[in-house]
Structure formats: structure tokens, C-alpha cells
Amino acid sequence: MTSGEPEIRAAGGVVIDAAGRVLVVHRPRYDDWSLPKGKLDRGETSEAAALREVEEETGVRCELGDELPPVRYDVKGRLKEVRWWIMRPIGEAPPEERDDEVDELQWLAPADAAARMTYPHDAELIRAATGR
Image (cartoon, rainbow, N blue to C red):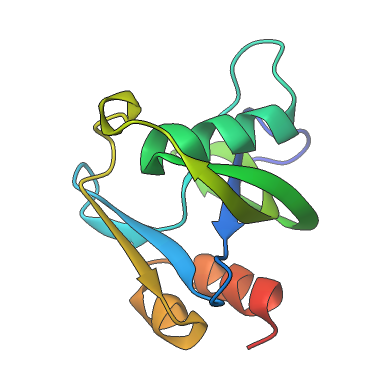
């Protein structure tokens, strides 16, 4: 694995609604279940990228809550760091504003959401965000 500063920077959210359900996404390109996230645009803050990526992928507008521990992993020899926030929904964008990276969304109870995750670090983030 690469050492030092991350070459790829990304940000995302663990979106939790008023009922305590967690929003999870299916990405057809990877055929995986994960949490909404994406790479930072040039000059963009991690906070702004997290909000933008969640809205682009899910159509759900959110506000930031507490920051969760970042996740670092290797992507084809490059270190990727993803910063995460707990998010609360505050509205929805029109469906036509969603991108096509996600083909299915589900609101699940925390334990079900954690069990649905393809990657263990996503399940750990859900448990950290929900205390379950």
C-alpha cells in the first residue's frame, strides 16, 4: 500500500432519517451496496463534496452532523482517503438532477443497512454513526 498523503480524496455521508433509518445505495458499475460518496472537485472542501455527492447520487439534500473517522484504503496502488459525516435529510432534489452512478436506494434499519454493505468499513461507519 502507498504511504504518505492520500492521492485520492473523497467524502460522503451516513444519511439517517428521523425514523433512524440509514440510506444505502447500489452502484451498478461495481455491483455493490455502499454509502453515498465521491471524489472532491478541484478547490472543493471535503464538507461541500460530501453534501454534493450525497445529493447527486441520492437526490436527498442534507445537512452535516458530526464527522466520523476517515477511511483509508488502497485503490490500484494509490492511497484513497474518504472523510465521512453523519447527515440528516432536509429535502429532495428533482429526480432528473440525480446522476446515474446509483440505480437503487434503500432506507434500512441500522442493523439491516450494515448487513447489506459490500465493504466492512461501510458497515463499521453505520455502527459508529448509529451506535448500533
